Length: 362
Image 1: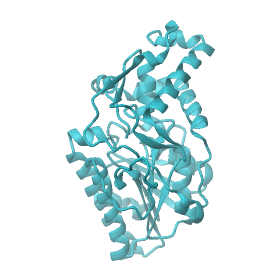
Image 2: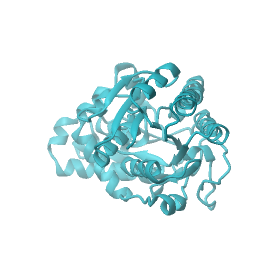
Image 3: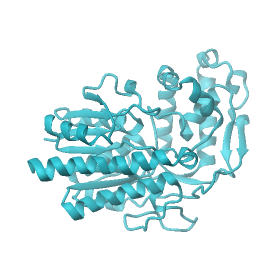
Image 4: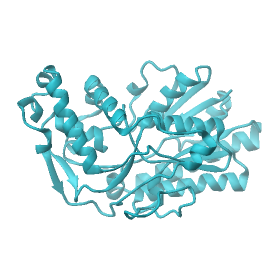
């Protein structure tokens, strides 16, 4: 039976994974290690049975101690800086956390699992499709053999961490797997990413700033489907292998934004209480939400298109997304409307103003 250390388990994808794994593998022990930086929120784990440790993945001694004392045989590594715009303005934190932090975890795992106990183990590293660079309109989707070509400090830092994980497998024999995912969305996502940011802006009558022409294409993956893919990689993935996890929903950002605007309008039309809760929303005044759309200058190095070829994951892991984008988006909108206390709680004063006026796609 696996005993898991989940790094970044109070973040968006990490918290959803802990919730999913607890439901599907109820007998497993789960320890969450999280530094609780701005995007980590202890409340995202409320009601979930797990041990929480407030700490940094760069604290190698702490990780070694947790692996030994808790008898942990599986690391699921989510902890990372993941905001592209932040990486453009301040890349140092991305190198420190994503590269050096991952290396610290690998060193701890090697010390305890290979030089120490010799127990069967798994180090699973969660990565991104952004390491592959940008696709043209007619290019084939990213596969596990697509050459790396990262275009932002964020994606470069994730590419470096991917290579470190691979090297520790081939050099030292650490039993690793890697998954590269497409654009995630769903509950508990910090409101700096497109869907929660634009939804919260729409509810407050704030602009919806669209980079360039808004036709950048992403493959949208509901976070629960992503968690299913990671879990399958843990249970059935081959050590040393990489698996691409996609949502099968390749859409331009502008289509996602238009879907969001129409859904907000429909929600207000169907529930009069929303106008009382969010009186500044255009929809509360009978005005369509799309009037908030505004175009801003594109960000530097903005990748034009991502797409995932997930045939390997389907064949070897039995993975397939369970939700269409329409189903996943409807559930996501309903969650944010029903959990206003959660997202208000994570928006502290200094960051609230930044979130209200900036746009990011991941």
